[in-house]
Length: 307
View 1 (spheres, one colour):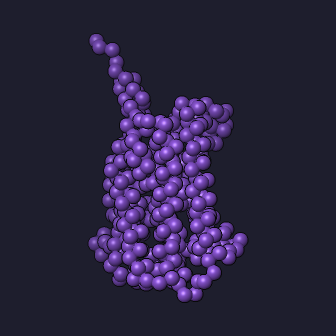
View 2 (view 1 turned 90 degrees about the horizontal axis):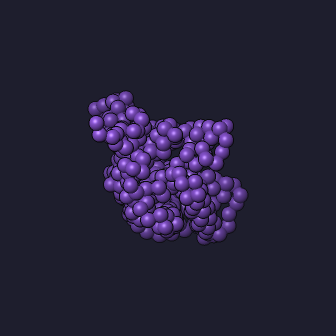
View 3 (view 1 turned 45 degrees about the vertical axis):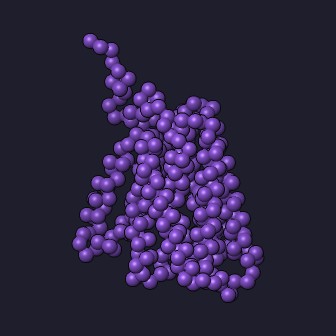
């Protein structure tokens, strides 16, 4: 009888993602797209309002500050992963902490990821259901969304999601382009905005949490590092991700600011006419984008449950 293969030695319900089975395949760009895909989402629609509250120049400085902080956080996660030789927060906690703090990390991670997935599911329903409300109920649409996402959630690596990650990034770029088109139709800087430097504590406190969440991709940074073939490129991956995020977020905020003449709503989609076909295409694209982001969050969620 032949000796058991590495596959046979794995528990029945455990992801088959051990090093013996999945050698690192990630490249520089698949890693960047995975981080950018994790980072960007529907929350970007609130960014122009942060510029209205904090003012233009302070808002841009705050964007830069949050990008630097996010890059430092990603690099800190990677340094810990390199030190422990583990590629999930729970595995690292198992080596670094005692039992009580291990469970504390697991509970925090589970609650965070479950909450994000639930929000994504509800947001995708809210964005997509108006297009099919005459034909199906929210419950049926929810079942369809679940049927689409479940197979994607069962893949074993973030590298396997490289094509859907590229689609997510493409969807966000489309949204930014549409807002740019609407801003170009306005064509001029808001006449009422002459002071672009003065700010207030209230405005900064409004902008800070929104911008901080907009750069949130650390939950996948350790896993992406584990899948990267050339580990020495991870610092460049983090830097490129944050530079892209900073550039796109600042450009999007300025365009949204111009589009609404200095007074963008908290969700810029609510500021457009409901029969605007170009903006409705954004709702459709964004709903699809959020669906494709669910597997990105499910990867670390499943990792928590299996550690």
